[in-house]
Amino acid sequence: RPVLVPILGDQLSRNLSSLQGLSPGEAVILMMEVWDEATYVKHHKQKIVLIFSAMRHFAAELRAEGWHVDYVALDGAANTGSFTGEVARACERHGASEIRITEASEWRVQQAIMEWEDRLPCPVSILPNTRFIATHAEFRAFADGRKHLTMEYFYREMRRKTGLLMRDDGKPEGDVWNLDADNREPPKGDMLAPPAPKFAPDTVTQEVVALVAERFADHFGDLEPFGWPVTRAEALEAAEAFFARRLDLFGPYQDAMVHGKDDLYHSMLSTSLNIGLLDPLELCRAAEAAYKSGKAPLNSVEGFIRQIIGWREYVRGFYWYTMPGLAEANELAAHRPLPEFFWTGKTDMRCLSDCIRTTREDAHAHHIQRLMVLGNFCLIAGIAPREVQDWYLAVYADAFDWVELPNVSGMVLYADGGRLATKPYAASGNYINKMSDYCGKCRYKVAQKTGPNACPFNPLYWHFMDRNRARLESNHRIGRIFATWDRMGEAKQAEYLESAEKFLDSLEPARKGWARVE
Ligand code: FAD
Ligand code: DLZ
Ligand code: SF4
Image (cartoon, rainbow, N blue to C red; front, top):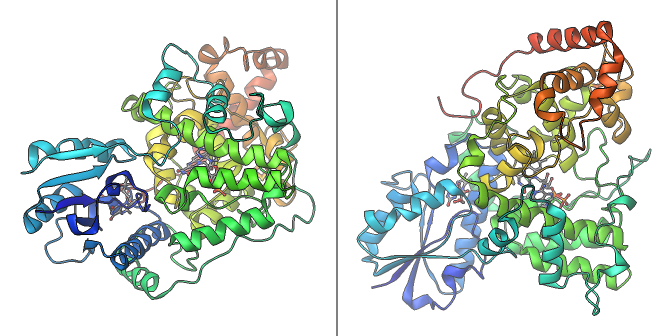
């Protein structure tokens, strides 16, 4: 009787722990396209194509190696639509002796897997996910007893653990851990970053595109052109193109925003990393090699490595450390509905409409667009965390609960009360103007503080500060801002608050049915 090995849509790695120590003759691999996963939020069409196509390609690669892969297609006869239903059916179909699975990356799915032992007729082994650098126990040891879980200290532990950019004397390369002070350049006039490669859909992907066009027509986002890597070979090609042509300027322009672009000098590798086509450590070692061979400077290489062994690992650890509470947290008591324009892009705010355009066209926006434009707006406008979470989870091809939720609730919305970020990243239009070319052609005036033509970020910023004063005044990184507010005097303050309220009252709430099946 074979061992049944379910492989989930974000576990597409040949070195998956559940496959270790097994040979093709002993196992049946189960892969399942299921309705529940495709619709628990209504994912961007390209995200569904990405996952289904990458799953189908991975199944074909395993078969070519001699594995028996039982692949349940979305429209397969009797598909029950859920992981548990499909594993139960497969158990019976194959008379499995045991189920062996690598733990899920998401809380929701892991809870379901943990019930299998009671619900199914054979024993279940759940193996650790070894495709991250830190184990759950390591993160717990780092976090226990700390009030703020500062990423920087965790990052240093990961540098020591991996030896990345570490000298033999135990000191960091360049004598500093973090070279962000050399980064954060505003965009330059031309910004001719070589575009990230796009991969033409093969017949497998074309079939999935047709399926998604038919079955998920009412989901957000443009279905085509679709160009994400769907195999490990394509993902490696995308990584090589990044290392050869964009890594050198990754650091300086990480925070820059340019109208019409979402790749710039970014790697565009998060989708491949998150579904398992690339390994985080292999990417970081390649970046380190680029530094050692003089192809890229330390500030860019350290910045890239920090995003992966720092932020990416940290948010994953934070997620498992704080769930399930993190999903419900709402420290700033934000209850406003998400505006309809997040789905349609119809707003006169040029920064927001461009970030939503790229999100619709590519199922991607880069970090500062997500954080300082879209996220900042949600924070200072007081949008309910649950609505913001659903939006981010649905619209980005790289979005999975473990990485989206800490970024949205912790980094952007301060909904966790400051455990992840030491202060809310609230900003007025000035920051966006400094880091982008958005404002010049916007119908709003970034230098205008109040009134109908003022950049809405300006009054919203002070409205946010004022309404959250009791919670934020004692924060040593932000508390001093209230002295500025007090110095303005009542008349100016009233102007700010009135402008903000007029703007907030004008927002049309999103119709039901965009993010979730009604
Ligand atoms: P690059 O800029 O090239 O960065 C390199 C890699 O570093 C990324 O591929 C990613 O794996 C990692 N990384 C960088 N920043 C973060 C971060 N804050 N958290 C985790 N990993 C990071 N990333 C996701 O992968 N999935 C998400 O659902 C997601 N949601 C986000 C929501 C918000 C509100 C914010 C502010 C950030 C979110 N991010 C998310 C992080 C980041 O925006 C994306 O990883 C990045 O834009 C992907 O593009 P890239 O591969 O070109 O990244
Ligand atoms: C996101 C997603 C989608 C759209 N569809 C599937 C699917 O049909 N089958 C599958 O195995 N996984 C899918 N996924 C990923 C899962 O929702 C989930 O993110 C992973 O199982 C990790 O918990
Ligand atoms: Fe955005 Fe304000 Fe600049 Fe317009 S003026 S692009 S709304 S920051």
